Image (cartoon, rainbow, N blue to C red):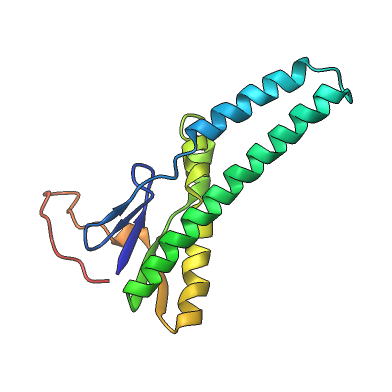
Length: 150
């Protein structure tokens, strides 16, 4: 099973199925709003501590939601397939572009690869990271769509 990690869809599997992004818009908006409220509070006052507690709880909820989603996706992949090949994505390139930095950071590509690797070792499955340069199916010169074998 080949896995392509990307921005539009978090993961695209070689059988055509896709895994969507982890939706964090609501939590990010809530965090931004709580940060604005916190900046207006008197530091170390009673209401400041209440708002700080709400902010910390929201950050924890966001982290837990990301971890839960990643574990569910990776264990589903491990349970279905015996051989897993993941493209080696350089996330640092996306982080340098200021318009793509947040989207790239929210995908957690390294963590997904890490989880698939250790879970495949647990279950005795084959895991390999392949160079993305040679995984394209469409010829860049003539546009011919060819079948690639990893």
